[in-house]
Image (cartoon, rainbow, N blue to C red; front, top):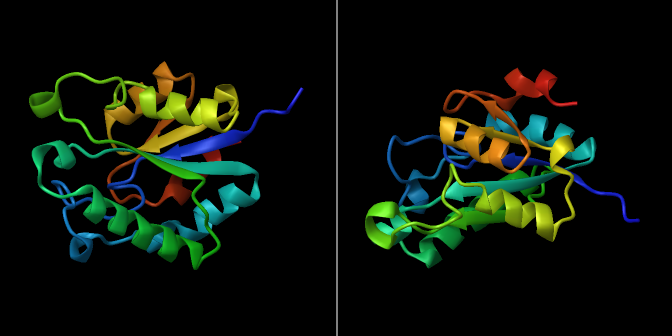
Length: 164
């Protein structure tokens, strides 16, 4: 049987890029947290897949477009790649309960993580979800993944000892 992968799921805003207090709607406001380059490279070198799982309700609100979001993600991937960090995938929930009703992918629901677990043959019991909101930890728990709560813009190196 194929051995399962292990992953570190990552929230985006406040974890991979600077928390703006509201939606990051344009590339000029998208500031990558450079203090996480080395830590994410270390996790990758330890065999973890790095998968982004982010709520992007601003899409449902019409505050930015899919194209603008893709541009921000391409920019993020490029900057991290320059430091040897490759994201296996980026999952996002485009919904917002006030605009599109209920969905199974908006955190704290585990839909984004479950997609990654299935698509990349991931063992949830060997995986983690790092986020700066309680809903990230809840989504991780619901998916069988260990949630790790950090403060917005806190270096991931501060919690590296919590990851085997």
